Length: 75
Image 1 (tube, rainbow, N blue to C red):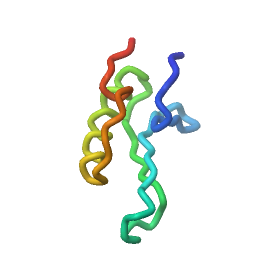
Image 2: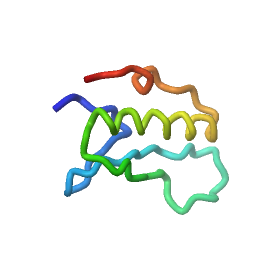
Image 3: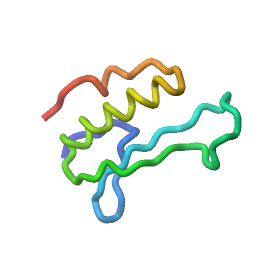
Image 4: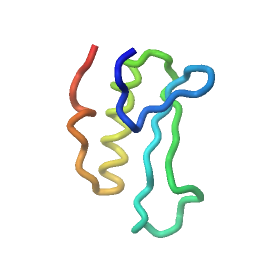
């Protein structure tokens, strides 16, 4: 099992999820302090690819730089 980025977590059924913290500076339009979304896969490689797309979207929304780890391909 490869070391996964900190924003990928697993459920008790081994489904992988994207989880990222919402910045504190944003207005309280979110009910939670984080966003969690199913990647709909158990495959770590596929999860990293799907997560990179979600991370790019959330980075644009929150105006964050994209971490380099999301852009690298691992097998």
